[in-house]
Amino acid sequence: MVEGYIGIDVGSISTKGVVVDREFNVLASRYLRTQGNPIDSIRRLLAELGGQVDSGVRILGAGTTGSARRLAGVMIQADIVKNEIITHAVAASHFHPEVRTVIEIGGQDSKIIILRDAIPVDFAMNTVCAAGTGSFLDHQATRLGRPIEEFGALALKAKNRVNIAGRCTVFAESDMIHKAQLGMSTEDIVAGLCDAIVRNYMNTVAKGKEIHPLILFQGGVAANVGVKKAFELMLGHEVLVPEHFLVMGAVGAAIVASEETDGKGTKFAGFDVADTAFETRAFECDGCPNRCEVIETLREQQVIDRYGDRCGKWSKL
Amino acid sequence: MKVGIPRALLYHRYGRFWEEFLAGIGAEVVVSRRTDKVLLQKGLSHVSSEICLPIKIVAGHIEELVGKIDVLFLPRLLWLEDKLYACPKMIGIVDIARMMTGDRVRVVAPKIQGSLWLPHFRAGMELCHDPMRVARALTRARRHIPVHDRTPLFPDGEKRVALLGHFYNIGDDFISRPMVDTLTGHGYRICTKDELPESVLRSRQGFARSIRWVYERELYNAFRFLVDKVDGVCMIVSMGCGPDSLVAEFMRDEAQRRDRPFLQLVIDEHTGTAGIVTRIEAFLELAERRQARALQISDSRLKIGGQGRAA
Image 1: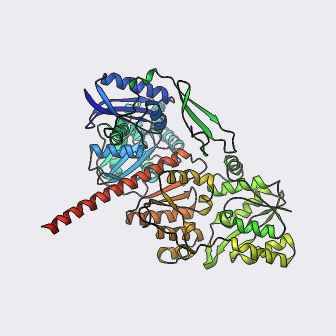
Image 2: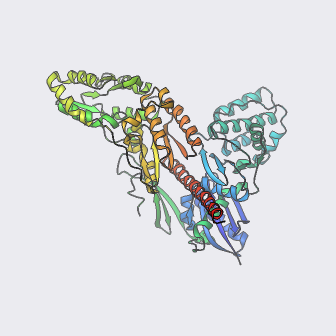
Image 3: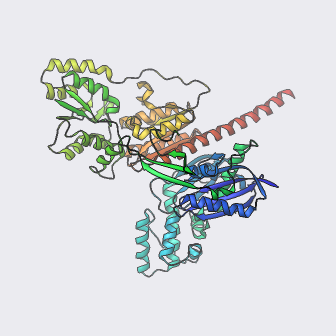
């Protein structure tokens, strides 16, 4: 029987999971839409991953990452819960040890990680604005009636890249509509949109960072060849989209799980949490005027985790 | 007579001094409660959304006090010695308060230009009319102005992070608590600018000489002093703060040259705790991985050196 690790990355838009062997070769991987219900998507993800490896893998360790890493960690009883900066960096330097820049654009956030000698040394994330991330591209593709999968290829056909304002999603959209009314081709406008996304990324997220090759482009938006091309034009370097670009966070979570367990044995609950009843509830604490929104996770009606309070009154179980 | 002081901005440095002084001239001092979400919401509805978080917070505190007090005590800081200026929003806070409150409350606003004594004496006279009593209260209260003349110790083997930012951001639990809890939770001692001696903070060496904002010069000097003594530097920047955004860039450059991890935390009223915690955790881990790597390298160099000598 093969031995391996499981990593799960639950983001705002998508839920990703992988099973890797001891050398971190990907044995199974799944990418699902979170659709606003992470518990359900984690459950489906585990069931599908379990089906893919068909109980032929003995799990030595489990790790979770992404914005719902805590919830996922509680549900699968992960050995380690790690932030997405580290997991993306770890996976990138595993597959490409010479990487010095990681560009990651997901559904609602984007980040840059700077590595030197395979060690992450600096990072930045988008702060208050999600302009230029995956959800926006999704929205524009729907508005233009094109499937998101073909959106990038459309941009490659552009003859004259149109200038689109990228500072703000709302303004970018009205600018695109305006350019369409002027009679410019969809291809040119979509290419302009890709440029705007890259410009916005460079001015907000990558501001002040020294970008050196090798440059990896990860996350859902890396599927968009138009954005990849726009990055290459802007940076003057080739941008590499790694084989497992969609699930790099999950692979990283699996790698840190192996570092963490290191033969000590795992707490992993198994692929069949699908049969366990999980529930999350939120309530507003009225202990003080801060009115913290406290979130609790229940397994079989029992509270197993609570967070969100500023004072620690609820999070201490 | 009830005199109210908002627990915000300069209160975080001069609060005790003001409380003692006002009590000394016979006022009943009312300080607004600690910042919380309700106070912040009150502030948001009174000031422009473009302004920085500390001003939004002080507006909430002022609104909270109005109706419970006869006089609002709100000093206006223009500059301290050496003609180092406060930021325009700090200078304008009295006007913001007057716009907000109209004739609902009387505002007493000592105008600080250089020294503290005379403007506070005049403000005291507005409230008390007995010059002897005002002078006596002021002299007694003065010992509550914080003065630091000792340099803290930096023992070996301790994990340290510099948490830099304006004292009114760090001093406000509502803003700084998630940061402080995360850092101390990971075993780091937090070094701030306000525990450093004046001789360090007032230095005019190098770039500090060109900084004409009083608190920005302090921040930059603290950064220069701490950067080589800590494992990393976190700089809290209020969204929309002009002076901060400029000085923080100089810090970033310098940190990069010295190969020191640097994190800029931008705060505004939407800042969720989760985002702050994620960033700090990633930052600390980066710092640790970097150090482990540096140790490995120096280790292997030692070994090579050792072999050389043996041969």
